[in-house]
Length: 457
Ligand code: UDX
Image (tube, rainbow, N blue to C red; front, side, top):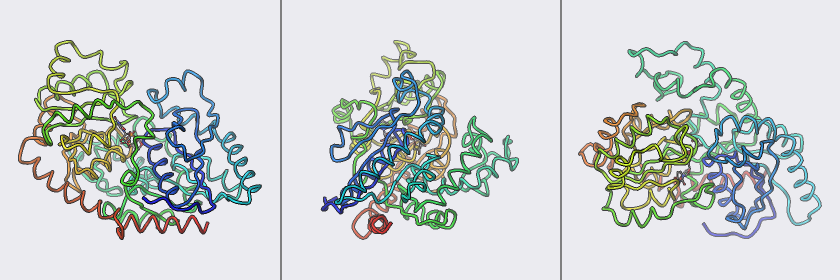
């Protein structure tokens, strides 16, 4: 994107401290900066973004009430419970920080603050911004179809679908297609009814906001975007997969292992299966070993991201026996964190075994890489249904973390004719999404509308 002159307006951004939320927020910062806005990023100590990677933005850190040990564990800890704590602790530091920025801007004759944009997972920001007379916009890092279900999730939970019998497992959830009944328990996870007050606050504060920004496009979910506008009664902007404009690499919280790229260079075209379960999902020791054996038995080259902390109770890959490790290393490469966008764009990658976080799903579509779906919970359950059942660009493992199933899915996707058909459909989807971010496309035009909306706030 071309750099434009400064427009005298500053936008304040406040990401939720998760890799999957920091990446899109900083990509949005780049998009808005390229349109003339100055950027201030307020962030917690926990999972703080690297300010030095973004010299054009101002970074302000606030207290989040976590202990030194919790901060030190950083991205490897149980982030969900930490997020709940931060939502309780950070309101007052956030208010003080925002107030200070606003006071400074009032004293400045050259620049005004136009709005706050923060993650839909913050519970207190709408109230704080209203009390300071600052318009707030919501960045939703989920697919719009998933966010649209927030008001109905408590109803779905109490409707008696759970527990699901075998005969009903594949039935659609009528209120939430294309989700199937067997997906529901992992959508709600261990949280159950504890989610209801959270969902209520998110819906209610989003309805009081000045609009929702989605990393999505009409080509992927036109009807859901229209519905989102009807449900939340605020303007909706779907400006495309953000990484199509700016890479996520510079906002990585982990050190990316760059040796992946020369290793991929040595592999044949479309021969490698890339395996990564994102920054939050955890698996058990047994599941880890099943994946290891499945990959090894598939005889297909693989690049596997085993994030420290991925396997419950383990540091990294020490659970692999010497023999298994040797057989894995014959065909593949294991790293702690990869430059994912570059990896997916590499000619050697032919498939992606993924947890279907929304960023990963979009990144895979944009590079035309078909998927094997192994969702861990929450929105991933819905994203994976779209991949396997609606767009037909992937194979769903249906939660079977079993060496035989993994071997079968890898071989089906990478070497069998079924994989070729999936690849062709993926190419069509990729082209559609690509058109949307090009000049005149739906996402491209949405950025213009968003910029004008912010200018008028
Ligand atoms: C979280 C939620 O789990 C997800 O369901 C929601 O949609 C977004 O927030 P996360 O689990 O981290 O995200 O997954 P995802 O959305 O896929 O984001 C992961 C990001 O980390 C991607 O941008 C990906 O490119 C990056 N990544 C991942 C790397 O750069 N290297 C890796 O090795 C793995």
